[in-house]
Image (cartoon, rainbow, N blue to C red; front, top):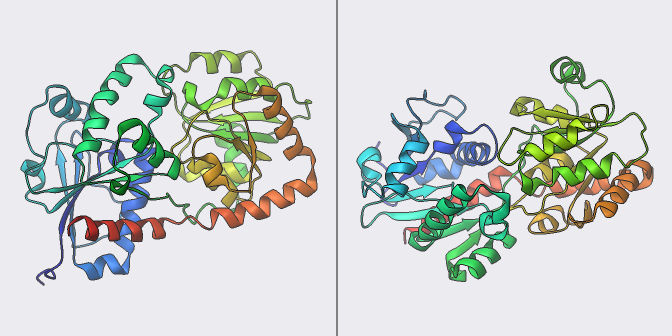
Length: 384
């Protein structure tokens, strides 16, 4: 069957989805998967090429099957693609690999070279490298300072994860307001309060979680503020709970590991936790704490709420926008305030019930289906 006259050939950079298990990788998998499941997307008749610099990785099997989708994988890694396109600045258009397309969408901060006439769409998740450059290794900051502003300037339209990120794009990069649209992330339905059979036994066997715990989730890096979280937590009365931090090692994480090592009986660093284990990990927690200095969105806050867990989080950047009135908000610089909020959320049963109810209602407002439907609309608008 020939595509409808208004149908588009859309290439999507799927590299992060193949290469990264968490963060932008999960964002890309969830958003693209939801897009391909939309009845409206099938009715639109668009064709999709999922492009990835993936070093010979196998074709993903976690997407809904569709005759409208094909894959094009470069036999080099994303690191080498970045070197060629953004460091050596080789002007090889991505269409050499995808074939001619009407629109190229990158959900990961940067655009590759494209041919004249190809429309471009870019997602910028945050500008933390400009707001908190000391939280990154200098080499990474220099790279991002060069390629992200150039990609934003080149893009026909930019998607931001939140109003806070949109404001940063306008203020810090001078992006025209009419060029930037907010597209909120969603919460997968598997994040829910109802436990699965045997999940707590699985957590005990896999991660050794045999005591009540307070949970935080995020890559180990300075922006997540884990050192202050550990210091605040160990000042709480010792009721047998431990602080569990789940997340892979990012950069400049030595101080986090050092602080945790000072309190081996009260702090556990799990490392990276598989996506399949995250809902159970949230559900088993007495409290979720997210004291980050800066977030473009802060999806773990909503995932914890969806699982029925009370939340304490920072009251900065996008987090008040995401959490609404369903969390206790704290100054990420205030260790006393963080400790006090955790204590209230752990000890006040009435407050816990109220936070749980509000959190579930708040999380229900954010769905990947809604995000995908908005993305589909942007595809149509950007090509007019």
